[in-house]
Amino acid sequence: MPDPDPAPRNLEISRTRTVPASILRFSAVRSSGPGGQNVNKVATKMRLRVSVEDLAPILGPSATRRLSRLAGARLTAGGDLLITADQSRSQRANRRACLGALQTLLKRALQRPKVRKKTSRSRASIQRRLNEKKHRAGLKGLRRMPADEP
Image (cartoon, rainbow, N blue to C red; front, side, top):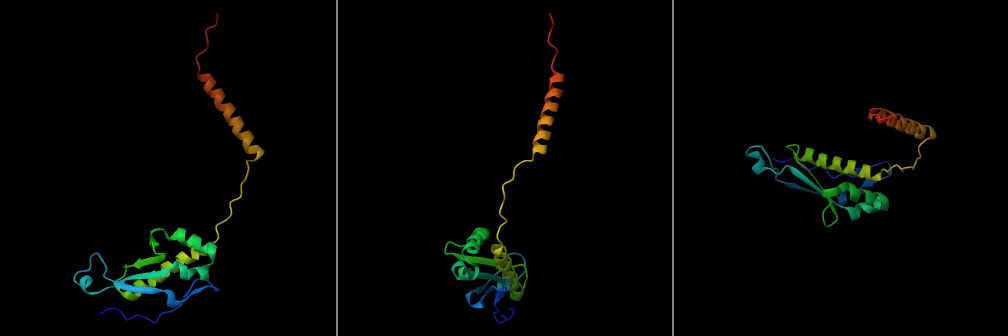
């Protein structure tokens, strides 16, 4: 018998941002893989579908763009984010796994990437490089055959 669905709860991403349960759509499907006869009778794999368009007001434009990039293959052609979980044999645990994966993905999308500052080499590092080149050139010069003197 499948686990009864717990009451839908809002998903907290940060102190100020919460995803309402009303935009999260869960469905149970039959899981693949080993499990004997139970796998043919019980739909324990959970599939979470949420529209990126519904998440946009919560995340903001820049985080929504990052989410679309981070989602990768989990983003459908219709603009939905599709997360599946079938690690457990219970619907409740798989539902929690889906919510955890969504929460992790949204937290990563909210993190602004560190701005890369262009740096230049120090004068000392340039000098070390040139000295090493001269040293190598000198060693290679010693390997040459001496020229015949007249």
